Length: 235
Image (cartoon, rainbow, N blue to C red; front, side):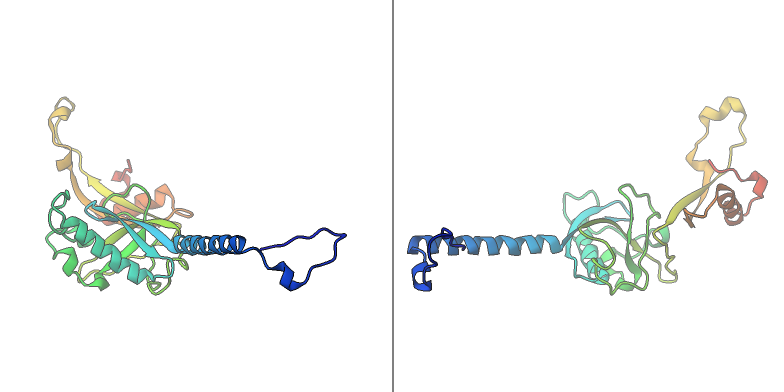
C-alpha cells in the first residue's frame, strides 16, 4: 500500500499513517488473492502438455511437470496409454499390444520392461515406424532441459528384446521405404491386380535432412532391398 501526501504539507508521523481498518482488511484480502493467483500461474507455467501416440495409433493427453525427467514422463505416458486402451469405449479394447520393430504378437504394453520403451518427438501426423528426434542417453534430463515445454507431441516406441535403438537427431528424417514389385499382367489387366500384394518389404531409414540427397536415398534403398541400382526408382 502506498500513502501519498501533498508536497507542501509536512510528512505525518508513522502513527498517523495507519490506514483505516476497513481499508487495511481490503488491502490484505487483495494481497492474498494476488498471491494465490501468482502461485496458480507458476504452477501452470511448470506444467507440460504431452500429446502421446502409440505405434498402434492410440492417443492420450498427458500432463507432466517441466522438472520431471524424460524417464519419469515415459513411465507416465506408458501407464496412460495402458489405461486408455483398457477402457470399454476405446477403439483398442483392453490393452494395446506392443509392436516392437513393427512386429505383432508381443507381450502387452503394460508388461513390457521400461528399458524397452522410449518417447521420441514426432509431428502432428505419424505413421508406424516414423518419428523425430530421440533422446538416447538423456533420459535423466528434465523436460525443460530437453526443450519439451510447454507442450510437445511424442511417439511411444517399443523395441524387441534383441533389438537396439536407432537414434535420430533433431535434423534427421525417418522414412519408411517399401519395395514394390510390378505385376506381370499386361496393361489391359492393370485394374484387376491387387496393389497391396505388390508391396513385399518395408524398411525404416534415418537420414539427415541437411545432407541427404535423393540419389543417396536411392542407393540405400537398392542396398537394403538387394536390387540393382538402375532398377530402383523412388516414387
